[in-house]
Structure formats: C-alpha cells, structure tokens
Image (cartoon, rainbow over all chains, first blue to last red; front, side, top):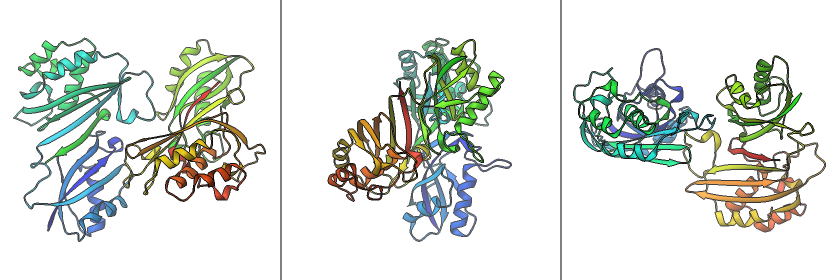
Length: 243
Length: 243
C-alpha cells in the first residue's frame, strides 16, 4: 500500500463539515465515495483536522492508504467525480508513518469580516457581515497578546472533551482593505472553535466592549463566558497546513 | 406615482438571465414578486438592459413606477423578501420621464479569466478558466483598436434582430494579477453577446490564433465567423451603469 497525502480546496457552504456522519453530508464522505469509485474499494481518509459545518478550506490536507499507479494523475481522476465545490489540488506519496493529523506542525486560518450593511451576493458565503464599525488599531494591539504559548481554555467551546488547553500562536495579523477585515492566525494547533472565539473577542475589542486588559485576563485564566462570541462558521477558511 | 431607480447586485448562476420568461426563472421575476409583496400590486420593472443566463451584476439598474412613502427604506424591505444572491443596493426617486434603459449613457462590464488548470471552488462561478497561457501585451495592443466608434457587426451574435451595429467604446483595459486576467470595457451600449465575443477575440490574440491586423479587419467589416468565440456567461459581470 502507498501512503498518499492530498491537498484539497472546498467551499463548506453546502456541507455539514469535514467529518463523515449520519443524516448529513460531510466532505470526507464525498471524497471517500470518489476514491471508492476510482480504486474499486472503500478507503478511509484522515484530515489534518476536522473543519466545522460551513467552514471552508483553501488548502486542507488529508492522507489515505491505497494503491494507484500514477499518483500525479489522482487529482484529475478524483476531480472528474467530485462536485465543483470540492477540488483536489495535488497528491504525493509520503512515508509510511506519515499521518495528516499527527504530522502537522503548523496551521493557518483566515477569518473574513466586512462592516457593510448590505451583504454582497459575491462573497456573503465566505464573509461575516457586521453592522457596526471596528477600530483596527485596538484590535491589532490586542492581537499581539495572543502570540506565544498560552492556556486557551477561555477561547475553547465548553462543548469539548479536550483536557490540554495549551497551544502556541505563531502569528495573528489583521489587515484592512476598505470595509474588509482579514484576520490571519497561524499556530501549532487549535482547540474547538478557538479561531472563531479569538476573532469574536477581537471584534469586541474593536467595537469597544472589551479592552486589551480584558484580553490579557482571559489569557491569564479568566473564563470562556467573558470572552467574545463564537463567530459564524461561514467567515472561516483553513488557509493551509504545514508539515 | 413615483418613478424610482434602483441599484441591484446579483449572482446570475442560478437564474435564466434578467428577463422574465416562461418555464425558467429570471431575476426580473424574482424582484417583481418581491415588489408585489411589498406594494400589494403587480409592478413591472425596466432594467438598463438584459443580462443573459449566468451573467452577474455588481450594480445593475432598473426603474419602476410605484408608490412608497419612504423610498430610502425600499432596499431593506425588498432584501427581506429576496434570496441572498439578489440584493437591492439603493433606491432613489427620479424624474417622471427617466427610463433605466433609454436614459443610460455608459455601461461598464468586467470579464474574468484565470489560466489555471484546477478551478477554485471560491470563484469558478464568476471566472472562466482556460488551460492555455495568454500574452498580455498582445491582448493590450489589440484592445486599443476597439476604442472609439465602430461598426461591431462582427462582434454581435448572428441571433439578433438589431439593425444598427454602431457603438462607441470609451475604454478597454486588461489587468493581470497572477493567473487572473480582468477585462474592463466601457461603452455607450453593447450588442447581443458583444462583450463576450470581444473578449473571445482578444483571447485568440493572446494565444496567437489572431493578430492585431485580423482584429482591425474585423472592425473594418470582416464577418462574425472570423472573430473569436463567444466566451462563457459565467465570467461576465455588469459592473455599473451611468446616467
């Protein structure tokens, strides 16, 4: 058996997230079905991590064990079977002990916000629209506090079985172009809903509901309920995974 | 009755074009239905021009005669009834003799092309993907020939009842950003499929199938069949209409 790593891009709008599940269509299932068509047998795939319902990916990675003569031709073969909102970008053979989840050491997410009243039909499915203004400088100041290793318990959904809340954030940049704010956050791993809660907290700073001191307190052990809201899934995009 | 001009943005992907028609859903019908819900009576709307099936608009304009107390509140009221892929951007009262079609004196279209092999789920519905490279400089040289007043018969679908093929092009710029080529064309009016055929002809120049001399011959009276193909609808966006 070959161990193959794939890059995939998808619009999460029409899916119940990455994970295969009952009663709803996950992206994993759609790709596994396409692989089964091509390889003639059931194949399980393992992503770098799950993305939630409605979350998108510019470049998610997953691995699978299978036999295929010309690995370079796998993306084409799969794309012919997949719907337009899921594309396989590339495929390459990796070591036998490589695992898309456990071998990942860096992930980057983007969160898109527009402060416009009327949502554009051209990007409303990959952008969260807010009807109030944001102070970019204040958000950028607070963003710096997240850099480094911290206990992110206050930035994790209460709905988790996770025990270890320590993660490291390598960078967290906020860029503004007109009414579009793009948050780019890179770290060694993320807790459940962590990016969406961090962005929700920064939005509260940007609108004056929280201060940088409040953010520091949250990182020092304050509770989840005092952090910002979990932002909607549709504005979140997994940019890439590094191995 | 008030005469009201509206700005609207729509993703044409799921519609059979602007025009109301039998057996297929036009954007006009969707907006007229929303207006009827709000005003309690059937109201006919008149656009600056039709857009074909699959063509989009950043800002299309249409006018309608109706009575509504606070015109500023019309966009909100309509957006609450409209699907997410059609938005009303603004509404304002205009003179009684104003007509969205006949009063328009300038229209600008954008055509988006990417020369990438794998279509992105994030823009494949507003971009035409080509699997060959384009020479930007050659296309820009040929583009200059279109500026000014010409007989555009060679750049009009044979399927037309139009008799007057003279139009004026004010500007035609091609910008490249990575693999994305954006054609922006502004004129006093456009014949049926004219933008898509002009872009198809420039693409033929960009891939070396046609020369600038060929383009000049087409503008001097050569036939439609010697021009480029009609490019797919999905890459075409009506940018705005000027009055």
